[in-house]
Picture 1 (tube, protein in one colour):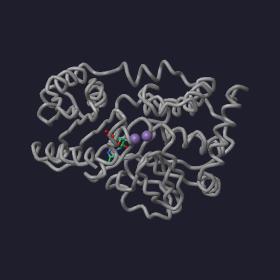
Picture 2 (picture 1 turned 30 degrees about the vertical axis):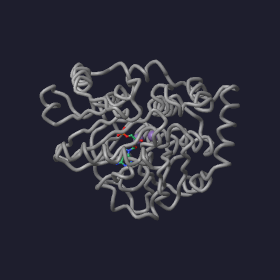
Picture 3 (picture 1 turned 180 degrees about the horizontal axis):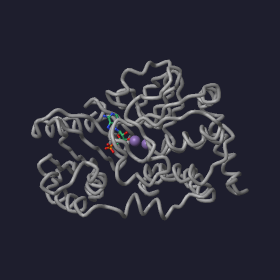
Picture 4 (picture 1 turned 90 degrees about the vertical axis):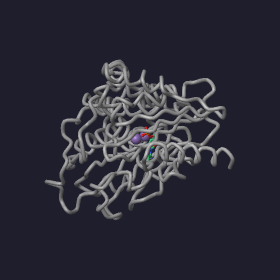
Length: 338
Ligand code: AMP
Ligand code: MN
Ligand code: MN
């Protein structure tokens, strides 16, 4: 499906963004190479997967060879994305000259152990994290964009590929997901114009929001209730809660069911920083941090060895639970002081 006139105007505006940015070298790399592997960060979310699928679909339209590497399963709520059935867990069939495109991650370590071996000179880094280290040989990084999917949209337009309905579905999913259904402050007029042009190109907004926000398992909703019930609000505006593996087991829930929880903690009126500590199968923890806008949670995450955005960030934290919580609270207070 061709972009309609109004969408074309918007597309031109997006393209100007690309020319002004650093994406031109990435475009050249995409044009010059024939084989690509799309790579996701650990605990993959909609932005990272949908960005890979959208660019993969576009590169295939140019006759290129595309593989989707994923060290795990596509999360249940993302199986509606076009291409999601094509991910592979091994490097079978991947040629020695293939380029690895890392989406939506601030450093190579975020891709996990399975991709740690990939040498920098074969990596393309496409990302919107404030803390991006510019790893890899080519990078297109812009932290002003709400989603990596926005950068991918610029690239696809730059390649001259028509935004098909499937590509539009992926890109709009990425944008909707990373803006919290257009609720967060990262959803600007530019984001909304891009979203509108994607709907005009065939993306089904209602279907996407249904899958992302209205298909929660009963166990997930019960878990949300339990975590909110146990949450603590401190005098200095920290709202925290902690989920253990045994809590998940008791509720018949898993980590995928925790997606909405930290947002619900942040929604508390007196909350400046929301904290959700999640025990992992190995006994270590991961922390999700959210800010109302006054405190930079990316800086807090960095103190803990993680990263992210000003208002949304994450980090690994060693157990046991008490020590993990104290370490996170100390990092938050140190950052607030600084
Ligand atoms: P999450 O709380 O897992 O939804 O993550 C919030 C944001 O922080 C996302 O943009 C993540 O990409 C980023 N993030 C989470 N964990 C890490 C980490 N260990 N290192 C760098 N960035 C992270
Ligand atoms: Mn992500
Ligand atoms: Mn993202």
